[in-house]
Image (cartoon, rainbow, N blue to C red; front, side, top):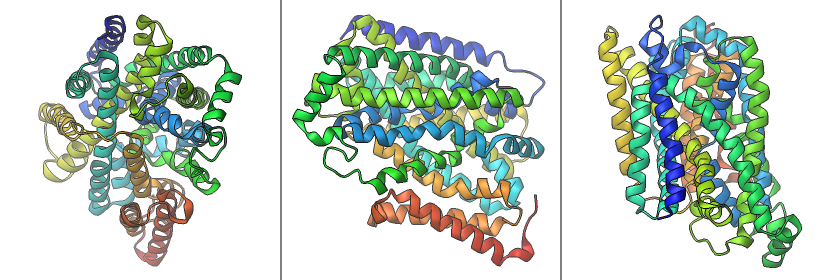
Length: 477
């Protein structure tokens, strides 16, 4: 075990953990428990909003799986990944003030609250809850695996022991802290990610003998590594372009990201988050994927792509500094997994239990149930993550695509097209999710594009067609 790196890493995690517990004690008493636990009282400032969106979206896929994929594919994967620079911008611009105004009008605490009030349909709620639970279990499993891989590579402990340490740490502070604990710690974690990725990239370039030497080494090994087409020439223009939808524009439909757009304090906070979030996401994603490519000449022959990040950090940095810098990807994973836990928990408690089982549940019962469900979900995902794949990025991208196919049109068209109704929303979600799963299973990457593109197109046709076809029964906002 590398004791210096281990101590500094867990020291950073301990500080984040304490901040989360302190933040949980600061919850305002003049808001309902649901408003506080799941939205932090709708009081996020611009910097905190930008960082919580960055840290939530910057996940194990970005910080562990992403560099691993870039290590295997070369600079072509970096070109593909920088489409994520648009994430924060498109999310806040498309949803923006209108989404915040409408969700406040509906008194919506979750994304499903918004859909329930907009479409006035039990089936919209149940389909939404089903989609969130199914696809976010895959996303959460990817985060658990990423945290376990990182701690395993750093400490030399077994994967199962490392996974257990990570799960316990996250579960305690998220279960008791709720959304306010998550967002406060996200602001710190986002800052760690920003600085840590820059430090590591500089160290990797120095260790590789400078950029010209690294590029020369990559070209000597495989000329395709420095082209836009990937190591095997599989990154075609159509495939790379489709990622503008998957990890760019389409991110607006991710429930864990969209809920951030209903939690900011005022217009000034919104505008500040728009600028800061766009810059920070672009900077971090570019750095992380460049690190993955540039690590290849320094540490050739890494078999498990998810271990590239921790191994290169230990190789090019002093152990104590490696521990601090590796707090960046660990922070990203923690931020994403705590947000996903809260989202699935709120879906079960708020959108299903309170809406359809016990609408008159008292605060104390809701509080106990919310914390209990959050903890149980974490344990279930831990069991799912015990036998991990070699590269978690595909598990995470599967979850992202499924959520986008389900929600993008009910959210966006619901905001901007009054003629959209519950029949259109139900058809869109059913067609989007069903076609996505069928394509993924039997016909992956249709027409040379990521599966999500065709599924989103079919979901759009279903939304418009069924809304117009049932126009006499439409629901106006």
